[in-house]
Image (tube, rainbow, N blue to C red; front, side, top):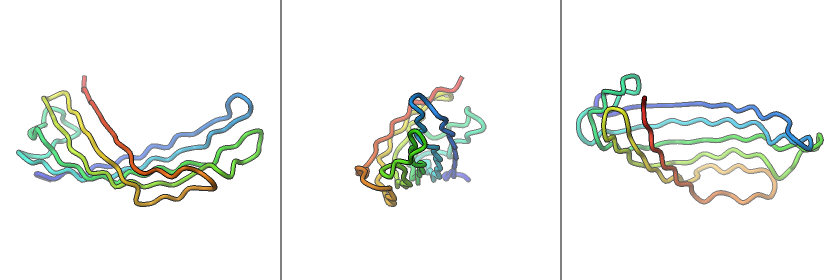
Length: 131
């Protein structure tokens, strides 16, 4: 969309029973990102060669739901959560086949079960190379 790009992703991970009859719980990750190209046009994820902007500002919503843990059929009441982060960041595209990004996420929704340490922030760094 010109200087602006809208991206999203979802990932569901199924946890299966491990040693000592433990299941750490399924997870569901969901993300939406709005990017703004400071110079040139926003990159097109389908065509790696279209990185026409070296610097891009990013604003993301990153969510993760995690099911409760179970051990030997007993559910841990101090496990499981749904957390949504607001994550502003910046991306640098150094060429047609690589980019790097940094974002700082602040939780805006913290639904955690039982007694757990709630998150204060998260830092995400990415280095991407396309072959």
